[in-house]
Image 1 (tube, rainbow, N blue to C red):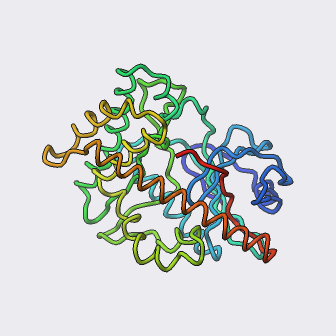
Image 2: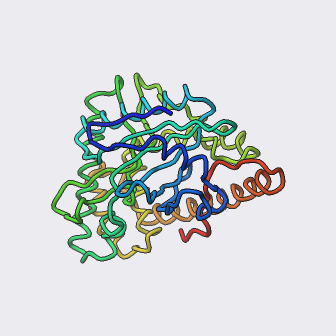
Length: 315
């Protein structure tokens, strides 16, 4: 196992993480040998709170065929965090561990400070009055614009991509007057001289094997480029409000977001609604097919399925 650390002071128990991965039941996590709670799910990851390492959230990414590939990803992760901070974003301290279990994909664990659920922006918006909700969206938009300004100064030598949806931001202590923390640093999206540094094939590891050729051909380029485009990032933020059952804030959010875009290309409510419907259909279908692959791999063939999948998701 190999570990890395940002300038924050998170210390990881290497032996415990190895034992956790060894005893992790990916079909029924509650039956794992070391107690932990699932905090959330990503497309290629799962987030845990491990009882024996309190105060930390661990994002587990079992994507890698060998240690060298995982370590290269880990190196890019720390570069990405450094670049985001150079751009002016506030990030939580983090630490990483590359875990190798014979016969399984190599996993990368990324640890961050565990924050209260109510301090995440998507949760805060459900309790804030409209003026404060609008202020919150403004703060997130301001942070994202620091990235776009950084890109304008540094392209083509360096360009950063960001998944800016509201669930990826939090205010430490719930203080809306502080700077929002950007949390979703686990996919290091940056280009050097217009060349993407992350191997897109890694993302395909979470795609059912029978879907990889069409996804590679029809969708992979779009997925890899959307987070470099300010307008598409803002569309995703607005659609996230529908996902979070907050459509009554869309007008206020679009007013804020469109204030940061060229007047000739404002994001429209119709566009956001169409994007949300399409995204909802795609991810529901994708999850159903991943569950089918899990059944084929683990139940019928008796193999190890490396990913932990959510139950029914209300998108």
